[in-house]
Image 1 (tube, helix red, strand yellow):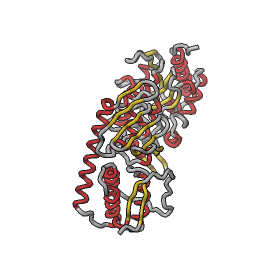
Image 2 (cartoon, rainbow, N blue to C red):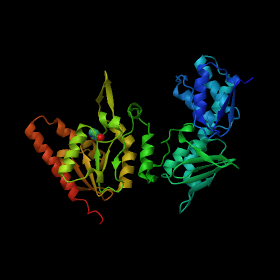
Image 3 (cartoon, helix red, strand yellow):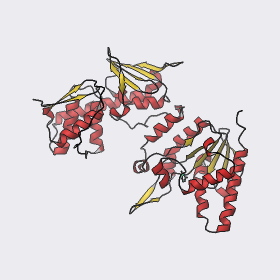
Image 4 (tube, rainbow, N blue to C red):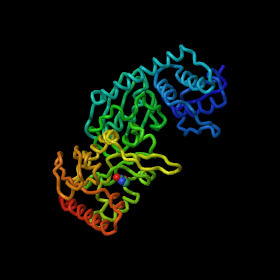
Length: 405
Ligand code: URA
């Protein structure tokens, strides 16, 4: 007989389920002792202060999240039992496990279908109404792909009518409600993580709003580098910039700050930009690779060069930045950026200091990476190299077409 009642805010309220599970499993409360209810409260959740952090394998937690996206009436209990048995070292009844695996498979299938058919499903209305669709979903996968849809549709408003419920992204907030009730705002973070990583199936070339590209890139965990870095360091600057600068990869300082070129190389870069008469605030500055790659040594993090695979993983983000910004001049800082953008092995000495026509009509200029200047050992050579770098930046600035009056 249940002695504890947990009220969730909506039928896919993963955040409250997880907080309650964390507290109750910590006290070894058995699955049978808990009754789960759904009733919108409009109140923020207050996790139990003594809740112990889970030590649950990622795939077990994802199975729980997938089960919560099913329509099984006892899904909260099943998912709780999965965690409870894991923590207490007891066995999960095989029929329960089979039901969960079947439910998760159905959720995955609906996720794939939704992602694949998103643009076929969605009708677009011009004006403020955005995209809309009516979907005969048999799971809660559409809810859990709200973030995916929002990125894919470039943050444009959308509405989804589902059996017995509606969901709407207004461009500012996510609204959700059962038929017959006024929808209320819910947090993206309250929903279970989708059954497939968020960026899987994203048609990045279709994303036309830079903030949507940036948000999607910030959720990317494709390579191990992304999992170890503090955060994604996306480009920054004006989306209508006439000059775009592309470096190699963020360093330690950039990783911590979440901004490109803010460390020692960035400071030198800023100085050179100023001497070349370029206002960094008018430009767009980014990197070929969006994560800091390092090797731990004691408490230090030693920079490691990103390899071809990592450059290839990040290529869609850089391509999307180029496509959205459409700069007049693209400045490639160093061989990594130049090779990635020109699509061939580049030797800086042979390619630098001249205008290069790129495939999209943009003018490219190759120059050294500012960190190269920091490494030149001889003072006189350093000054010479720095002056050459500033001259390259001036050349790039001269290739911009004039700003609109
Ligand atoms: N080096 C780069 O290539 N990019 C940065 O953002 C910092 C250092």
